[in-house]
Length: 446
Image 1 (cartoon, rainbow, N blue to C red):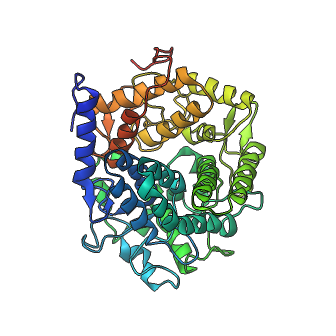
Image 2: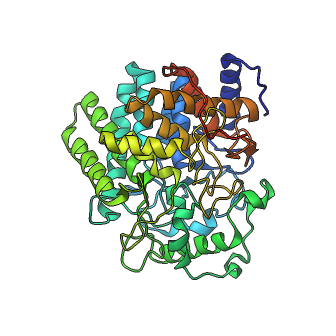
Image 3: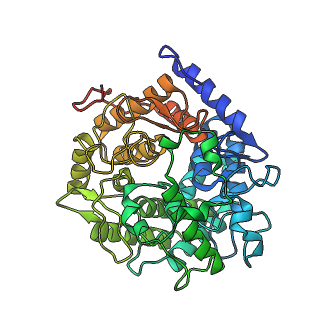
């Protein structure tokens, strides 16, 4: 779907709803009919936020269908496989993960890893769209959301109030340069892919996707974790990192759980305390005052000096003014070049690993820009928020609801009719524009 520059907000809203309806599948929404035919975890959270403005009932179904696949230890899986879809329609599919052989896994087949925990935020947004019915919904989902956070803070603790990820896929930013050094420790040959067909390359040019070498390491990491029954125990993890985006969303979702607890009459203070502890740990361990950025940590706790968009996402939390000022300065400077035409790049435009077309190594994504936008609004940075909002809406108006966008030209990349791009456009259209009005900034792409 290629949108016209002349389409009104009402036209864009109709187009976005059409995309979501076209991707609706028996209680949940697939990210893309072509490339992603199952249910993805953090996709469903963003999609539920969009459905809240068009069909709150579908927003509730979206989250409840995902939580129905929660493991007994509390993990919410990255993928829930649709049994009606051919088993080899996506790689890695259910026969690769083999969750059916793992004690504590749900009856439906899933992957064995997680994704960023933004689900409590989504649940609260869905409730606000339909409060009369939403309170019962919150009572149903609260136990699962609490168990999700308990798992991350119990089994995935780094010992300093932060949660670790054990696969690049868990970050949602699969091939980000932030993971290159840690991935280099993983010994894997592309021969490990023998017998597996990467279905992504049937739909998207190889220059826009992770490389075969990346995939070989991804497979090796899962192979070892699966051999340990997906237990978070010594020897199970070939990859370990602390992701600032993942932890910022965990803290923000703890804040949302506190609000949910207040609504349904549960204790809320423990959630507020956990949110504050995570935020303080992010500031102490991931924030570099000299660079004015939050960095990922490797398995030894060392900062990874790559400026990625995830390092801006802690703006969703209550931060000191000097930290906010530094993050905004970085966002409007040459590394991220905030402008009103293209969303924020996923990686430093001046960085040594920058690639304008390859997945999370440069392309601009609607979901990460939406998170940063909400952070800017939290801190009253209305001029920057208005500019970023305009960039996101301009991108989908000009190129359609694409998976991601070229950070220089704004050209659409990846698959079309992508659900979270449509869903978050609906959220933007339903939310009054911040003031003052957007203004062009230096560094805008030509």
